[in-house]
Image (tube, rainbow, N blue to C red; front, side, top):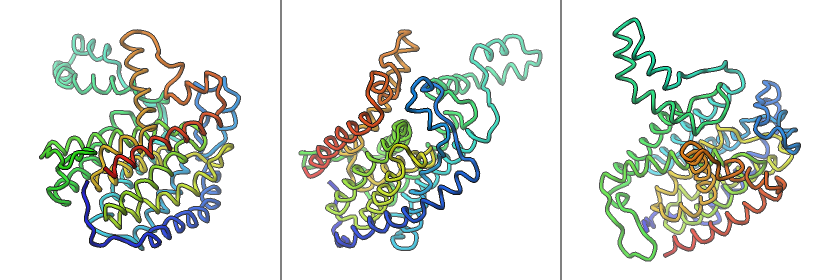
Length: 376
């Protein structure tokens, strides 16, 4: 466990930022609601869930509600918690990831249809294209084309937004920034992976860089995948960031504790308006931004292993999609009625409210266990 006791903020001072985040977000919510309706930032309900009447109203619910959290956290941090050592990069990574989400949200609403060539078509072009230079180009870029087609399997069914491979490139950049900061700027202690109940960590050296990049990318996408029901992602993120806030304070990272408290407070206000029937939905702008921030903040205080538990339900949601895709394309059958797994339970007959609340409870248990592990 990494600890720097100098500069530890008073707990009551940290709590005040949670309250400030909640108040500011609550006051901004009516303005954001008007803006989203005015510019018709409405994505529509998922076509896969059209047969479920409980989702019908979502066709008229605005997205990009996550802007409420991102703006609140960015403003409060900039004016009251701006620290080049510990909040500068996390906020930057959050904004980069949120910007990617915003582009995807807007393209899904206002963009035109986008198509990518199938791999079979590209193979035919390599054989029959009249220009030998183009045949050579298609052959050289065949691995990249294969990667693009493979990534399509893990994307949504819409063809308007940012393609999965484009998201991964920008997420890689955000993850690389976080890895550079943690590896180069925070010191040698952050090159270690700390295991609960083990007195000394394991020095990964430069290998920690790809590990950080992967964790940031996977966590951002995991939160994005879990954002599929009213209140689901917001409620789980509240307990996650509040646990991370207390861990940051215990470990002596006052600025990061304040940042996590601010996020937690803003999430409380957001979730208040996101409870079914939601006034607005988080959208990629919120889920990608907060997922990346969650990973960076946990890694910045040396809590990689506890992160696997305090973010457990998000990772379970993401893994359910991976399992479903691999099973469908490898064995020709589905493991779940629908992925991510919260829709599986919905199709089993659980109401949306029951699914959300049970996921909250299970996630809370995992968070408590992860918190307990972090103390050892």
